[in-house]
Image 1 (tube, rainbow, N blue to C red):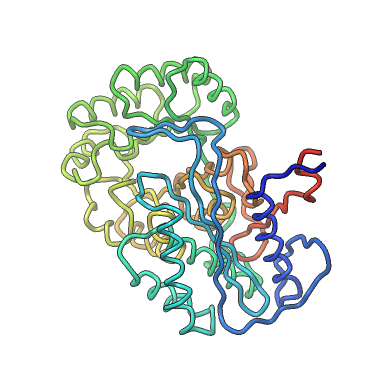
Image 2: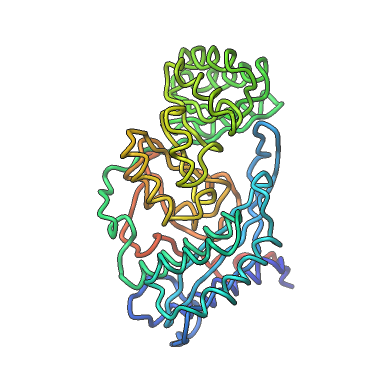
Length: 399
C-alpha cells in the first residue's frame, strides 16, 4: 500500500500542472515534464497559489524568537502557455501569514490582473499591486518574482543577463548559525558549515551568550571570517560599539543591525566607532528607507521579502551605490524560488547571505547552486529555477 502526505501530493499536482502549461510555449523554460505534453493558450494573465510549510533542519533562533518551520506561499503566473514561479516567505516577525497572503493575492487576481493582457508591463502591474494596501511585502514579492520569472522565460534570458550584469562578479555566500543552548549542537552546526567561506552568527542574546557562541564557533572554525547579525538585540550603543571592536578582533568582517530599527541615531553611533562595516537590515526595508538611514550605516541588506521583489530590489542597488553605500543580498527561510530570484542581483553585491534554501529539508525546487561557496548563475531563463517534481509519486512515498 502506498502511503503519502496529502499536502505533498497536492504540491506535486501544483508543480506538475505548471510544467504541463509551460510545455510547448514559444520560449522553453527547459523544465522536466511528466506525462503527455499538452499545449495551452489562455487569454489574460492567470495567477494561482498554494500554501507550503518549509521545515527547518535545526531549530532557528535569533534575538527574540525561535522556530522550526516557516509558512510560505508558492505562486505561479501563467500567460499564453508559459509559467513563472514566485514565493512569499513569512517569518512570524514580518506580520504576514498564509491567510493574509491569500486575501492579498485574491485582490491582485480580481482587481489588478484583469486590467492587463501583457505581462511585459511589469512596472504598471507591480505599481498597482503595491498600491492595493500598505505592507504585505512578502505577498507583493510573490507576484513580482513570478512575473519576472515569466517575462524572463518569454524573453529566453535570465534576469542577470537582461540587466547586463557579469556573472563572474557574484560573491560567496555565508552559512547561518542560529543561537542554540546546546554546546554540542552549536559545534555540530559549525562543523557542517566548515567548508563555507563565511559564517553568519546570530547574536543579540546577551553578553555572556553572545561571547559563548563566538567561542564555540572558534573551537571548530578558528579562522573563517564571520558575519555578525545582532537582529536589533543590543540595547546600549556604548556596549554595542565595544562589542563591534571585540568581534573585529575575533575575525568578524561586518555587523548587521546592532540596534533597534528606529534607533537611527544609536545605529549611527555604533557605525561611527566600529572598525568593521555596519549593515542596515530591519532599518532598511524598502527604497524610501535608504535616504532616511543614509549616514547611519555603511551598507544595506536587500531582501526580496522586505522590498517587495526584484523590481524594487534593483532600484535599491542603484540608489545605494549612487550614495556610496555597499550592498548585501539577503534572504529569509526560503525555497530555491526566492533564493534563485535574489541571486540574479548578486553580481552587484559586496556580500551575500543566500542560504535560506540550504537551511530547510523540503525544498521542492532546484535553482541557484553554490560552487566552493560562491553563487553561480546559469543560462536558465527567468529567475533560473526548475521544479524537482519529487521524482514519481511512488519514489517519494513509503511502500
